[in-house]
Amino acid sequence: MKKTLLSIIKAVSLLLIINIVGSYFYTRIDLTEDNRYTLSKSALKAVGEFDAPVIIDILLDGNLPPEFIKLKVETRQLLEEFAAENKNIKFNFVNPLEGNSQIDAVITDLQGLGLTPTNVTVEQNGKVSQEIIFPWAMVNYNNSTVKVPLLKNKLGATTEERVNNSVQHLEYAFADAFARLDIKEKKKIAIIKGNGEMEDILMADYLTTIKDYYNIGAITLDSVATNPEKVLQHLKGFDLAIIAKPTEAFTDKEKYIMDQFITGGGKSLWLIDQVAMELDSLFNENGTALALPRNLNLNDFFFKYGVRLNTDLVNDLYFTQIVLASGEGNSSQYNPVPWYYNPMVFSKNDHPINNNLEAVRFQFTSSMDTLNNDYKKHILLTSSPLSKTEGVPKPIHLDIINTPPDKNIYNDGNKILGVLIEGTFKSTFLNRIKPIKLDKPIDQGPENKMIILSDGDLIRNQIRNGRPLELGYDKWTNNFFGNKEFLINCLNYLLDDSGLINIRNKKVGIPFLDEEKINDQKTKWQLINIGLPLCLTFIFGFLIHTIRKKKYGA
Image (tube, rainbow, N blue to C red; front, top):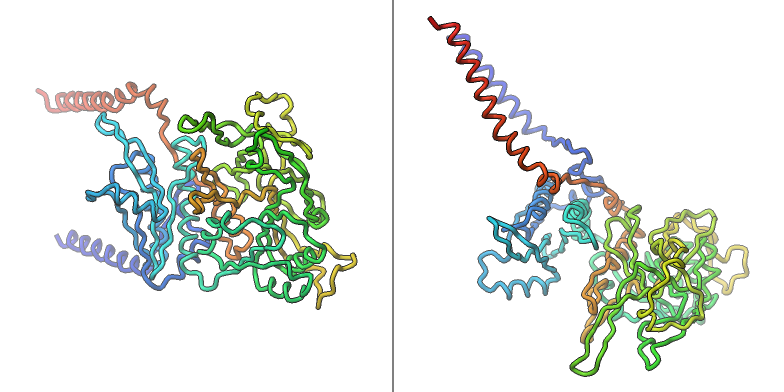
């Protein structure tokens, strides 16, 4: 009796010691093959800065189909990892439509906040119904709120691929939200003006979005002719310059100012149209317009960085549609038609900028070539293998939609449409006569990077009733494209010193059951799961009965 009591006391004491020690030494072990619950260093840094409660409302609760239940589970597990690193992280799942009698009003309010709903089909007890789900999270800190999209849609993706894409995006989405809420000092972005660049209202949605990350200001190069030193000093107060669709040639003096900004460490994002051509110009009596080369006087500038922008148009069998009207008055009909000069570009998913993106829409884009030099280049976007280039000047006709393309001539292969350049940049005016004299000119600067894109309209949002629509949304076809996310990734990569955007390269694989195999082998596995236990029970029962009978039988 004493030995038994002593053993119990020892066991209880051991458990108490383990619990006490465990309260001081806490750890979590990630046993997943892809380490999906192991937070990256930059994510840990982003979440570790908070010293006040961060409340996260996840609008993903209620009657959900299986793929959204999986997304909900993965979101919960990831947020538990964040909460384990910082006790100020609090989260809860809510159904914004539950218990509300004014469903339509709630949906309208949520959409007004920029939360786009998703219609899903739910099957329960043999009944099929349509449900509206808002796959979003709201991260609240002090008086600020950041919206986090939980669902990543990609054109043509299966249910499994959609969930995988979404789960893969979760860590970056939340880490990015935490970083935005804790920004102490925003970096500065200059919108370059003075050479016929795009109007602000045509890129208003993009500029409004990046205000969450950066401070934005305008720099006009017109004053370079009279006071170049002042313009350069003003420009040096910014971290990055965006040059969006210039239509007038740069003077050598203006190029030299931009050169000194870049050589001095300033980042740059160039969206360049080498060909003057707009879809609106085709809407005339003849349905024809002439595509002409556009001289921006930048060829030698980009050539020094190892990039040549060609004066051609990319014609691609992977296209986006345009909408044309037929009929007159009230009998008018609007029909989507193929438009081969608007390539639909799918990313190779080989860089943090282009990874896990929806298709990007280009419009009257030109091709680029990369040249060998000391700079590192990464091709971000290309046209499809079924594309070709057409030289300009060239008449463009609307009636090409009525002529089936000859697929045999679409054999030029992938054409470069966007490139990232990195390295220790040297002045493009090195060993050349300088167009103006500057105080302390720079011939070679620090490590730097720039991005060149061969379509100025990538950043262009459409207008409805005088108000800008979301970048990437086409009001005519009601389609969404990945332009906005791609361009935000470009900026974040160029200006990200923490490496946060590299989380986008993390690969996550969510295992799913094979529905076809389940249907084919359903009967077999039902028999195994039900019949096998019964058979084993009968066999063991018979054996035990036989043994007992032999042992104790008369």
